[in-house]
Image (cartoon, rainbow, N blue to C red; front, top):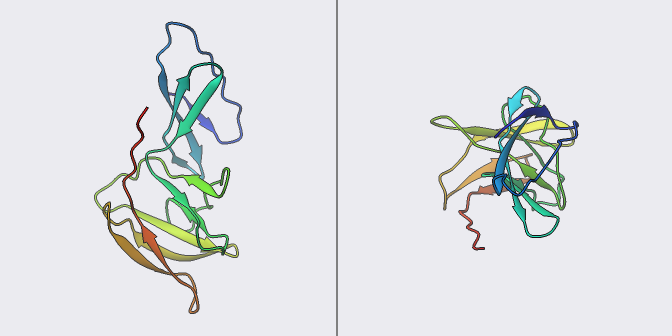
Length: 135
């Protein structure tokens, strides 16, 4: 089952023996729904994941937003932002640095990249890769 909430609300998680091993959560961020999945594993471990996510490898503290002029998505762990499902025929994401939106680019197909001009001195690449997990 799925439930809509905001990012800062606690999410009650109750795992019973008959509950499915996987569920979806749909928190909203700046008016945009972001699909996040959760899988229960043996013991008291739960893995939270997103179909699309962004990791800032620039060292410039780059944020990512799901539409122009939106607040950057929150970061977790080592600078990971969950982007959820990037829907639409030509999805775009926006990048910010120093609190300002710097660029909006179309999301490339898996295995491709797009050039992102953050500033006149900072050109980066948005690389889309397909990852898989084996249990």
